[in-house]
Amino acid sequence: MVLAGYHLTAIKGTKLYQLVEGTEDDKWIKIDENSEVTESYSYTEEEFKDMARYSMIVTSLYNVLKKLYPDRTVNYDKLIHFVRKHIDKDIDMRKIEQFDTEYAEAYWNAKIKELKNEEANNSETWRVARKPEQDYTR
Image (cartoon, rainbow, N blue to C red; front, top):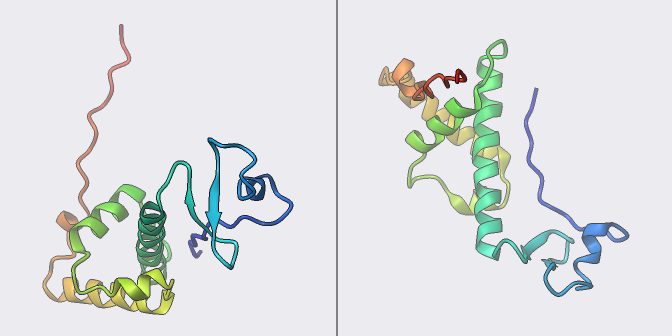
């Protein structure tokens, strides 16, 4: 299984594309030459870029883990925890922004190998604080 995230695209003839035309003052989007949304009434251009980078980083780690451990379930909370804990300044954000999946997967493969060598890829690496059981009694 492979996880993929795609750029929001406004295709001519769709309701989303109508927002490009600016039919409503309070709801609008801006697109680039590929019809990919770059900005909207509810997200700035930088927020769209942040979402795309985040999507690329998370989906590439998921795909690496599924290749390494095809029979294991990749828990979303643990995935996010791992990204936050182990992403570093050495990642080339330019390549991430260009959706270079080969680069992103190579980054995570190297990071996982490094963690295994340091014996850091243990339960602590993947531990996520459990939410307390909610009491539904009255």
